[in-house]
Image (tube, rainbow over all chains, first blue to last red; front, side, top):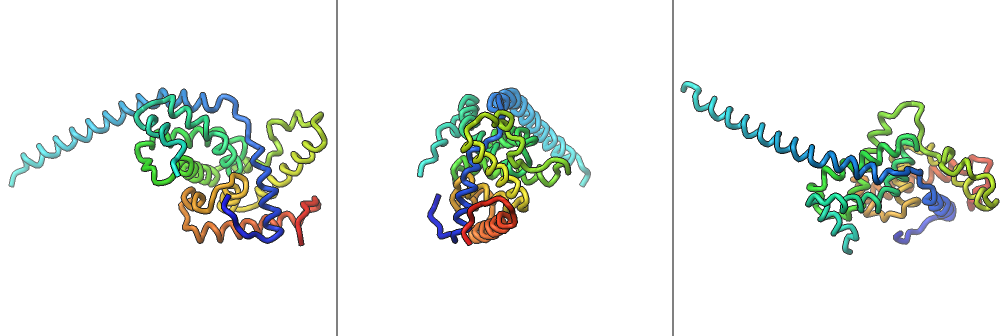
Length: 72
Length: 187
């Protein structure tokens, strides 16, 4: 922590709160669960991004064609 | 200062999942603690999972201007406050009263029991603060972040961080003074 000048009561509160770092909620298996989800989401996301890029390209192409055919 | 997570972040950005898993292992405890103080123990696991998956899918947007931990905690801050604002009325921020070792507390040494009781009571008092104030107090006094890091995490100017922290500590001192428990607060 960077040094700071606290009044006696504030300093006491700060010290009391520091003890709360010892209380981490238990979440057995959480890192593994996150990793599993990331594993299946990664390829799905890539596929969705590719599909979105393709759809965007198609939309641009169609839009260009429609504009090109529009009577002047 | 070099970010200790730099290599793992770079590898994870290139799609190296074991590198991302290492980042999860390194930081899941602090994300759990911070989110639990905002959304409660019942929801902190889901919120933590959400935080890491958001980070995973946004890694390509991470510019490395701040350390990875600060960037991750910013996602945690936004996700937790957003979840808290839409939270069910019956779900309260974690006060430690339903903590995992509560059931086995009996039989532990007296000092340990007293320390646990004090932390539980403190958690209840912390719960009374508004979520933004609670967040800066948790980041500073519980997790030991610097003012600069808190400004980065909360997306708040440094002056506002200091003001918010000052207000939060005052609220906390007031809350502890109006209590029968002896917090040994100087006058």
